[in-house]
Amino acid sequence: MTGIDDLPVRDELRGKTPYGAPQLDVPVRLNTNENPYPLPEPLVERIAERVREAARGLNRYPDRDAVELRTELAAYLTKTGKHPVGTENVWAANGSNEVIQQLLQTFGGPGRSAIGFEPSYSMHGLIARGTGTAWISGPRNEDFTLDLAAAERAIAEHRPDVVFVTTPNNPTGNAVPPETVLALYEAAQAAKPSMVVVDEAYVEFSHGDSLLPLLEGRPNLVVSRTMSKAFGAAGLRLGYLAADPAVVDAVQLVRLPYHLSAVTQATALAALEHTDTLLGYVEQLKAERDRLVTELRAMGCEVTESDANFVQFGRFADTHAAWRKILDQGVLVRDNGVPGWLRVSAGTPKENDAFLDAVRELMGTAG
Ligand code: PMP
Image (cartoon, rainbow, N blue to C red):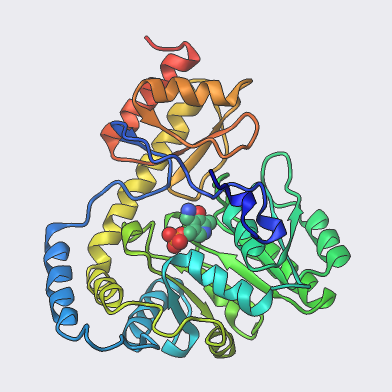
């Protein structure tokens, strides 16, 4: 049988495996930081209406610049981000993964490099590889906070073209203070200058504010966002960025024409009409996240501070065995390869109860 390595694939792809969490059919799935609440019925109806309308025009290519959608995303950011954002500051794509890919195609590429501070979102490194950008793994402190002095040293040494800062960070959950992001921006400008991409996929769940106000006067800063988490629309595939209009112009050089289908644009617009309802679920999830932290600690687990819709907990001598034991009780959590630690996404109260029971059993503290 022919295998991948029998094909003339690029050298850097040889022997590699594709990214992806297991999609197992178990009763409680808390492994991919999805929102556990299905979209409310009135929104489902509105999506059907808007998609029906869009279907009548499917013989034509969609709005290539997605202007109406970008305008509504800008309005959402302005309303929630304590910083005025205009249509010209926003760009949208199929998930923030595609946004990140377009950024790396624009600012990275062969002969260039990108840095992230790990453990962090592993797709940053994988998309770097896919775009021919060299990947530099920067350090973190023992408690998973960002080690600013070490990060500054790494930036000065490697002079990367793109710097990723994920806040709140995945899989650890902790947020990066604005002063630290500012210091990294300064270090990155002094070294190269380079683009700093702040990945705020989980910011709606944070105790603190978005870093959008830092965009003011910083054309090499980009804030990346998604509708996959807070909006409960992971299946929609809609990510977006906010930045200086020049950045939006620059990514046009690499985007595929008509990359965002008319159906996607119509669905995202319908979801944005229901922002208030959807963000109501965020409050419930934040409360459940806090409950997970408290109860896991009460069981004797170590828990990393979380500003996201998930919690990193440990420590386990045999991480895989712990993951397996929780799975045996019908609960799927995530082993991100951080030795000793697992990650659980906040689900519905009932799902979280099932998870907590499974960990209680594992820790031998079940009553
Ligand atoms: N950034 C971070 C930090 C993430 O955790 C994820 C999803 N797991 C993404 C980006 C990508 O999300 P999407 O492509 O669904 O917008």
